[in-house]
Length: 357
View 1 (spheres, rainbow, N blue to C red):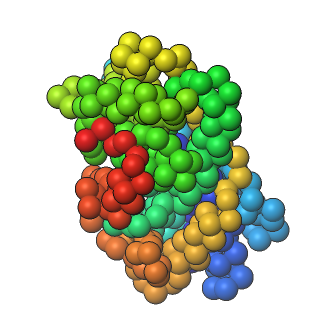
View 2: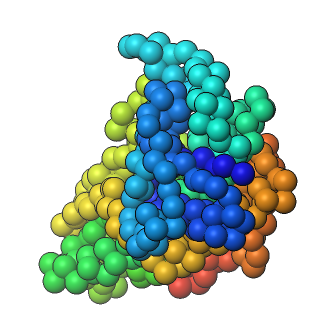
View 3: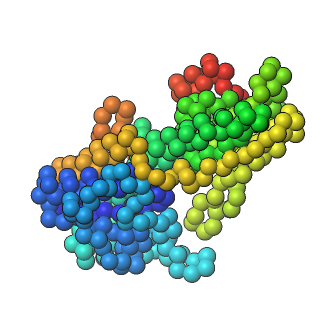
């Protein structure tokens, strides 16, 4: 079997580790002749970019490397491909023709919900596809963990540790805005690990008056500083998500700004000096932590093994204990928020963390 592999959507720590695992499992374990890397995601197929021949030798040293050696883009949906200002066309047949020209028998797609939805549509048109769940947001339906997430949590936790010392030194409120889009996984996990005093997530719209009152009470009881973690998709009860840039055509809106809104609310009520840190793309960068290296390696090997068994139009998954696969139709268009009964939420409540409820 001749494999193609591409990385789509936003980058995440662990992409290179999956590429390495796929190449080694395909060529060393199964003896398959070649793995072709498609540059820049689906754009590489539509625009006919030259593929990169991957071997166990050329993928040495990738397990600890961040980003993706294949590069990526989140603006190249072959079913709604940009062909001019505010104009899009279906160029999926061109992508499929390119797959056939390259002699690719199966395509491994490393991506989030958007890329996996595209993969599912290609599979419906006859392409043999295997997906692996990639996103720091950890919001892909059907799996407990996406590679890249644990590194983002570790990065955010480290930032909170550093902000504690400066917040304490200046008696300030520090508001830290984290990524995650409409899911609060990064904010919740990093907030608890980083000993945040308040954690605001999209799944639980917060009450501004109650939040401000709780922070003011902390100050009156002797707390000289507070750390507030805010997911970028968090919103006040009855309010809207804060958007830096509205969606354009088929592309999603760019979330952001809620950290400054919360800071303004708190400073106006508590009269305490308040600062905002937007961690941004730092959460995507750098090498993967050990947990993501292991998960990415498991996913890469499992993707190849599933194809060897004759499976396709599937995604590899992790249920908390073991690796498996599920049909892409159960993944495409889905979303995995933090459930209201998640044990970490209850632990946060018992620790006295303000959740804005």
